[in-house]
Image 1 (cartoon, rainbow, N blue to C red):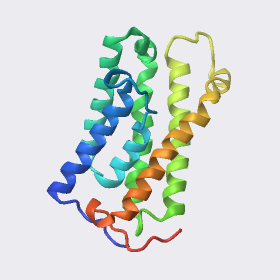
Image 2 (cartoon, rainbow, N blue to C red; image 1 turned 90 degrees about the horizontal axis):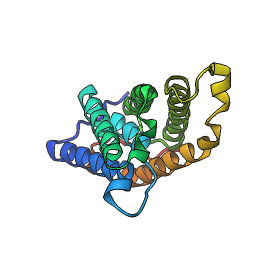
Image 3 (cartoon, one colour; image 1 turned 90 degrees about the vertical axis):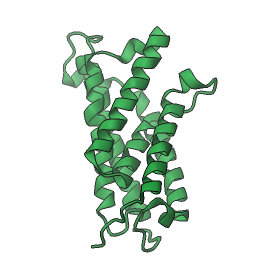
Image 4 (cartoon, one colour; image 1 turned 180 degrees about the horizontal axis):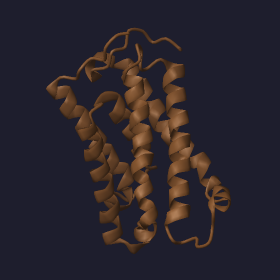
Length: 193
């Protein structure tokens, strides 16, 4: 098995800056622009795990996402609706995505289409279950509901949750396979599997 290439200092700076910028642009779109772009955070956490790998980077992006959310809530109380005890469920949600990226980074060809797509789809589905269930079980907005009842809630959000993350991951895959050496990824071929 090949070892992943370590990004140079310049590549590392560009990767961190790009992830932070895209998180601000999409997660904070309600604050920064009049155009509301779909949230790219889940895809960005997978990409971070793939390219940055270190836990310290994961912690930095969790803090950034949290600051964006609390900043948005401070400017518009509408965005405070989800900031409940269930918000803590975002930590394992992001961790699932980061760990999927980390797993990909240890593969011989992390950008093999089938492997990359399956890792993204499976991780996104589990992230959806974790975030949805933690919100419905712990937010306090749905009293006296148990696990069976909460499983029924939120599933109408699954298509958009999956499609937006998949869209961003597909865009990253196209970009990364076109410029693999510039991104510090070890891509020996563009195999399908």
